[in-house]
Image (spheres, rainbow, N blue to C red):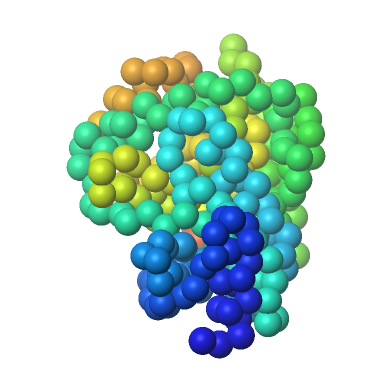
Length: 292
């Protein structure tokens, strides 16, 4: 067993309160940033481990906090985090290993109900107690009582600033930012705990049928912001929306505001992956401008 896994086995044993000796390491697919493996112990217990040679420990510390916050609501299931740290030049996070299967319509409807219950859990303000990342992009989460200012400065404005550093300027984006208040006429957002990066690739279904969400980028925000990346990549059908609306129906004007929330994630993908997302950014800005 190499020194990296020996060090992690020791930390798992300390954090769990029971000695952990690794019997096998199984490499898992699916991650585009971090390496993911299943650690199986000689006692049959198993842990999910993600690691990275370049990420600083704060990245996994923020994910650890996000998973803890989501788990504490007792709404939608997440892998319970155990311990994070740095060993042999790598940062890592160990959490509960959950065997996942494929989705059925009933799973998606349940996910919708549970996500609405998560969003209904009262929160004190917008922002969060720490910054984190969205993908590998910094995500600023200062405490705020003004959602519109928060979204203007720390979400859309920040991503547009990053794009400008790449030499990209999106026509009419300033007009949308300047008139952001108009999208919220008659609607007063309330702070909800958001997963923050809930696309279909960050959702699984336990073998017992329970929905499981993971890889969060948590903060307190308008619940509608959760839907931005969900519509960007799809995978959430009518049964999901039926379940969500059965618990907490979306407000009037949701469709008008949705391009603002999809734009944040599309700009982030432009900043991470390049010009392939430029056209989609322009289309969303135009949709938002036409809704003014």
